[in-house]
Every structure is written in structure tokens, then in C-alpha cells.
Amino acid sequence: MEKLKISVFGGSGFVGKRFCEIFTDQTIKIPKNKYEPESSDILFLISTVDNYNIYTNPQLDIDTNLKTLIAVLDKCKNKYIDKGKKVNFNFVSSWFVYGCTDPLPAKEENHCGPRGFYSITKRCGEQLLVSYCETFGINYRIFRLANVIGEDDLKVSKRKNALQYLIMKLLNNEDINLYHGGDIIRDYIYVDDVCYAMELCIKKGELNDIVNIGSGIPYKFIDLLGYCKKHLNSKSQFNDIDPTEFHKIVQVKDFYLDISKLNDLKFKQRTSIFEALDKILCAYRDKFQAN
Image (cartoon, rainbow, N blue to C red):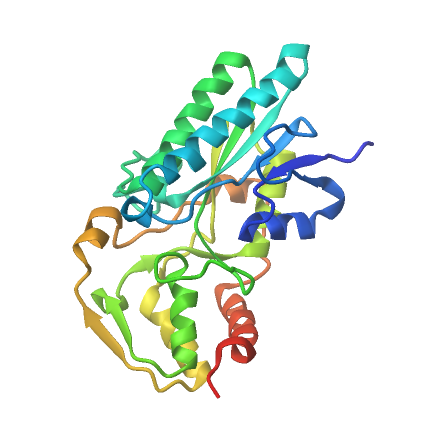
């Protein structure tokens, strides 16, 4: 049987790069600024990463998350659909599209109320994808990812992947300011598990469907930081502060995913959150710890 070949858009990013590394024989990494796929199975990961572009370039989320998506869809249609061939378009989205949703854990059918340019354009991207695909007969899947962590994330900041950003502060014994004192709930999953989950969905998941990809476990942020502090013997102190006004506008306090659909595909998480943190702590010690 011929091996599945997946054209990966966004293969130089944190998740896309790791996906291509794990599934080297199955992937074709599409170069940046090229919109045409080289196979009829597509994994689309091109995206901005946080809600703060509104301060520096309000067009960036629209250009990256929407215009690029439509450009790639047009190429898929011209190359395959117009010639009578099928296309399976797998779109990587985010838990941010849910916004303030109720109840938790969030199921795929929950109402979405995203806040912030990144979050809103990701949701808009989902809707544009569905409309385009239904119009032209393209098969699609939407993967809504939880918070993804891993030692090779090069875009860690207080705006994106705050947990790993604060681990760097713990390494250097810096005091840490926490919104709500860290008493917030999040769903974390290790990058390799995200890649295995996406590959499983691409091979076995329902077409024209949305799938949550996460651990499905509600982790308290302060507990994860406390684990890291203990294992680093850090002298950092945690300070309880009020969220900024912008944070209140774009962020939700507690969130985690229902992963029943993923579990129905017999997905098994290989790396627990604490095993993932151990990997990150080990990698960061040499890289970021002050002398």
C-alpha cells in the first residue's frame, strides 16, 4: 500500500517542525510563501500565536490566519478539485476559539465566543474553511489544540506559552507575578502527543468534523509552577496580582477540553504533563540558568 503523503504548511513552526521530524517519511514540508500543495492530504499550521498583534500590526492576524488560508485553499481547488480529485484539508486551530464557553470541559459543539484578534481570526478561519470546502467539495477536519508545551518551542514569552516563560524565571530565582495568584485552570499536552494525535486523526478521524486535541485534564497553573519550583530548588516567590485590562478583554480564567472524540479513536497519551515538565526543566537548566 502506498504511504500517505501529507503536505505540511507551517512546517518550520513549533508543532509543524516536530510533526515533520516524527513523520519524516509521510510529510512534505511546503516552503514558506508557497501556497500550492504537493499532495492531496494537507496539514495547515500557518498561524500567528497570540492576541497582542493589535498593538503593533492589526492586519497581521488577518493576513496570516485568513488570507493565507484562502490562498492555499484556492491552490488545492485548482490543482485537485477542478481535475476531479479529492482533497483532505486538515486545519490546526486553537482552544482560544471557544472563548468564554460553558460548560467545561469544552466539547466541540460548545458555543464559541472568541475574544482578541488572534482568537477571532482562528474562529473565522474555521468558518471560512467550512464554507469554502462545502462549496467546492473539499473534505476537511479541524483540530482544536490545547496548550502545547515542549522544550523546542522557540516563541516562548509571557504572551505565548507563559508556563515555560515562567520556568525560565524560576531557574534564575526571579520573583513571579501571577494573575489570580495562579489559581487558574488550563489543559496542557506535550508536543509529541499532539503530533501523534493529529496523525491518528488524519488517518482514522471522521471527515468534515472538529476534534479537540489535549489531555482532557484540568491542571491548576500554580500547582504546575509549584512542581517546577520544587524540582529546581528555586528561591522564587509567587505574587498575586490583578490581571491587566487587556488580559481581561482577551483571556478566560479557566479552561480545559473534552477529548471524547479523540479517545474514541483509541488515542493514548505517551507523555504525562509532569514527564513533559521534567524534559523541559532538563533542557532549560543548561540553556537559561544563570551562573
